[in-house]
Image (cartoon, rainbow, N blue to C red; front, side, top):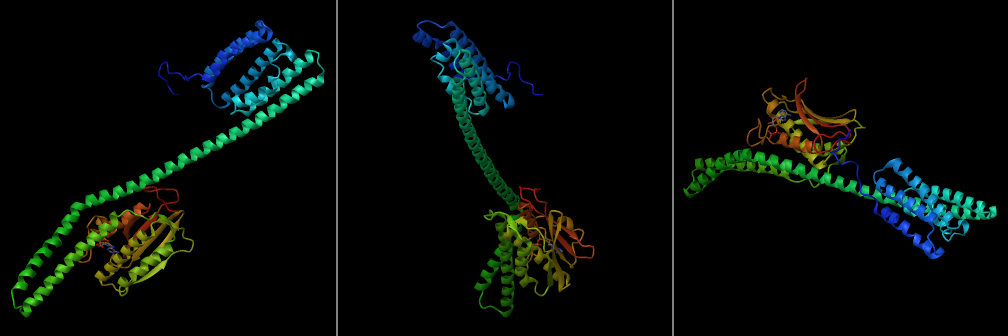
Length: 440
Ligand code: ADP
């Protein structure tokens, strides 16, 4: 139950037009004076009663809704028509100067209560019965009553048709307005999500900054020292064969240092860039084929790559270019692990699976797997077991981040039969993980 503060009942403002009409009604008795040269007390009494009823309506109208409001319109149109017929009866029955308006009354009611077509029908019925009774009771032929009733029926029909059309137009306009509002809200929401995803990624880059400085500082320091050494050596002429060999070694070290910095910067650049491509429903077969083709050069002498994707595998929501980047990283990692362990040529299996509405993609190898001390640290920034010339320790972190961006997850485990298994999983259609994306 809603508790309202004291005095704050469901008060709404009275309807001004109804109040104005109620105020004017008794004044219309001036017309009686002009027509009959005297005040018609009966008609004045009816007008005052009608005005009182209208004042009550003006205050009630805003408080009602639903079926009560509809009933209110119906009762009110019946009462209004009845009051008007009473004025006609007081001012000369069928000979009253006001009788002609009886025909148009349902039409007027339809205009006033346009949102409720039934009001014109009720008014039409009251007017037909009323005018028919007046005609018959005042001794006129029944044919005249039928003529009057037919005319009233006709205006009622037009009134109902008009108000129905008006209501439909109103509903269509409201629906269009609602649809526009809904669409705008959805667009705004999508924009907010995209901005949020970008700022989240930028925040991660920000958090990475300190570690990046540390990682880059080391190679930069020896690159700098090496360059100075090279400069000094080049000035000391002539170069002995021993010095030349040393210079070449120093140059190679320097180049690997620069390449390492370059790799870190490239990884981070790809990560922080705003996705211009939207996530779309993409077929895993295409993405996997692209990644395997790109990895082939690196894996040529290291592994046989096998792809097993069941034919009915549903498409997943992803940015294809990003997903290729992730898979490429996983394939190259598997190749590196096989190479390092000396188990070449090894086996790499890319396997797809649908469980219910969830879609999974596994990259498995028969390499050494993850040692127990490595497994919990795999998704740590800059964690790598490779030499500085090979690994940056950013691959898995960035892959996980990219996948989360399109609603998927990345996990790692050891296979029971040996080797590593990386699992990408898209949730069931309609379930979202982070920023509203899901598998389709
Ligand atoms: P990087 O490849 O630069 O080292 P990653 O984040 O891609 O960075 O990988 C982190 C570490 O995870 C690797 O250094 C490696 O020790 C381990 N790793 C990744 N994939 C595999 C795999 N298939 N088998 C064994 N170890 C792996």
